[in-house]
Image 1 (cartoon, one colour):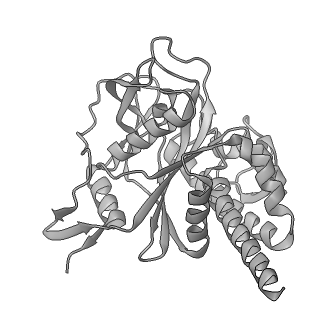
Image 2: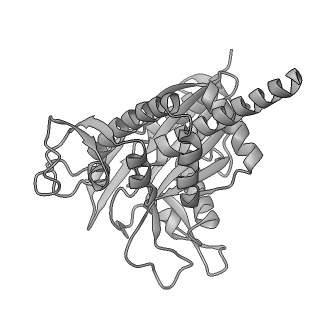
Length: 335
């Protein structure tokens, strides 16, 4: 009898850890999706050639490094829709406007988040009607998801684009969340409190710069997705609001977990229809348990330059920043 009760308590504990981690990965890192409307560029920029696989050992700035062997990656995508898909490609009407890569270092028992600017220009595959690669183009990385079936194939194509950006680093798992989940979860936790960083006059007059407000419903969307019409319309500045919101949402989620015994079950039932992932149930639970127990070190960004293209914003990552980020997250210095 005691053994049975102990087993049940262990199962409940595992479920709690897994669910809490799922909330941390999906809801906290990917919940505020729908960042912007359809944006694309058809310029002549050529992205640097990427490696098919990362080097297992390399030398950088006079030092030698070895590729870490016990690292897992999860790409979290927030999806938004644009009005019309291209007729001559195997395409869909959803772009990955929010991209965050979680790097899980199992040896160090740490998790680092890399926030990827959706305007980042990089190489990506164009897919034909059968889902096979027919061309390679350089566009904003958010558009990689528009090639494919809008689900698994599009997610894989986006993961490959992220791999191209990060010099061939393999993306193990992906997890996408659609825009409809934003208001659902934001309101489910009772809203998110932030101090407004920008002047939203004419866009959302409830958001006054410098005031502390509790974001509810569409106001949360306005706060994390708006940039046109603001004094600073760059995606870099919007990403600062996103990180602020993410931190506040994480804190609100933690509070809810500690104060509502039914929170996990209710949240999961509401959000499952909005998620696509290549993780099996057992694998996802295993990864989630790790993240629940590991230290979340920081949220990082790639350095670079945002410029106005012929029609839309473009972010050109600094090559040195990419190299140093890849080395610091995925390599270890040789003794």
